[in-house]
Image 1 (cartoon, rainbow, N blue to C red):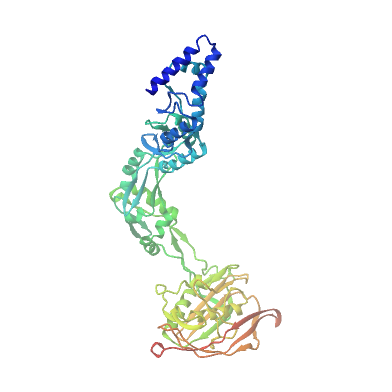
Image 2: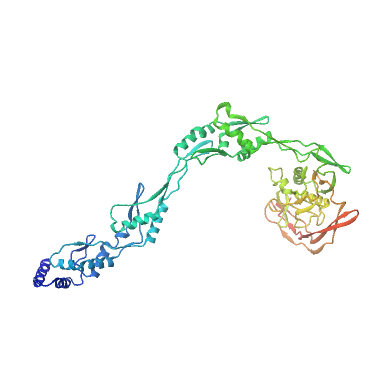
Amino acid sequence: MASRRRIGRRVVLVAGAVGVGFGGLYLVGLLVSGDDVPEGTRVRGVDIGGVSRSEAREKLDGSLGGTWSKPVKVRLGDSAGTVRMSGVSLDSEETVARAAQVGSDPFTVIGRLFASDDREVEPVIRVDEERVRASLAEKAKAYDRKAREGGVTFRAGEPVQTRPVTGRSLDVDGAVEAVVSAVPGLGNEPVRLPVRTAEPQVGTAEVNRAMKEFADPAMSAPVTLTVGDRDIEISPATLGKHLTMRPDGQKRLAPALDGKGLMADPALATPLARATGEPVNARLRPEGGGVVVASDGKAGQEVTAEAFHKAVLPLLTKSGAARSGAVATKEIQPELTRDNVGRLGIKEKMSSFTVDFEPVPYRVTNIGRAAELIDGSVVLPGETWSLNGTVGERTKANGFVEGIIINNNQFEKAAGGGVSTVATTLFNAVFFAGVKPVEYGAHSFYIERYPEGREATVAWGSLDLKFRNDSGNALYIDAQATDTSVTITFLGTKKYDAVEAVKGPRTSVKEPGTREGAAGEKCVPQTPLEGFDVAVDRVFKEGGREVDRETFKTRYVPRDEVTCDAATEE
């Protein structure tokens, strides 16, 4: 009935307008429509005609408002998915305004007086390109992947293939453009987003070739190397730890062997050391006022990483007996030989010092081992010698046992106890040879068997004893230990006629305290002794005259009396 009334109304108005001009018809049409959106107006199937603009906006927002905020179907290469797109929304106000504007066209207004055809108006969509870009960038994170080169690795003596993977990445700039272009008509069809691909340089065919021609033969059996008069077998598992195949820049995989790493591998280091051997310096001893050669030096043999690489790599693609080959060795001369002792300036005793000790078993072992490692050291002019670097860490594997050390100003048990006796002996040899101490440190409290202000201690990783040979000639260290003493002698060329020690008085004396030791087996009781400061001058003399002097200052803390539980005392 309502529709019939509207039609009847139009007929009456049109009839009354017969003979009225074009402008009059337009005015009549405007009066009929008023401020409403023209009847028959639709936006994506939503009828917004015949109502006010505000009502039309409400209908659009209610029916279509969420359409462009829903996930957008997309296609990236061969894969399909969706993107939750922020920054795309319906502008219902502008859509309604445009619908009303189209409806106010004179011909449209007059036409509506005689017909009631529906009209489809396209929605107005607002796009915030930066927000769209951000949405697509998130999609790119999930989609993108780097190209992976094909490769071959070795694990537990077996070759392992790495299959190539094509890289891909979303062209975000192009994708923004594609989405923005498709926004007004977003529907069931996915938006195709542009992607870039990156093909690996090493493909499947090359991986297969590398496996067949190199990797499989390389791991098929051990190889045997002849070093000097010894044969050393290298297993596939050991080989594989130091063997790789790398792209050569020509889209092929080439083998690469770490010769240095292979030589240092525990499976080879010991056999190689036996087959080659370090050079041995000539042994010297003081005699009278000079130096004699006790035994001559001996050349050693060395295998270089380059020679090892050159020998091993060609064997890996062979089979049977052909997987054996010789390694070239290089002769290494010792630093000190019978022939060059004189030329190096080792001609006389520069200094010698002895420290006596109680023959406790751990001291005998540790002092003897440290002296053994130091004995025969050759220090060339300008070189710096290190006790820690020469003796090494005081471990069971290095020949040391647990003994008594000083830690946190008290005695306790630890590996290497007693080595400080060697350090003190060597410090005094340095002192009286007149060469330059570089790093040294005294014990925290005074120990009566050492000379005041002329003693040293060492600790692995924190305190070393170092000196620089500034004598101008080579220096030889002779270190000898008995069950009750250790003696260190420096042989070379004297820098001064004489070096003397002048000790000052004790000052800033401080009395010790009394305390209990830490609980446990490491507690060691100690007797009390005062702390004090002391200065010792090193006096250099030439022709009986003093030519130089330097002062060594030492601060000793009090040695507190420490008591331990009777069950843990030695």
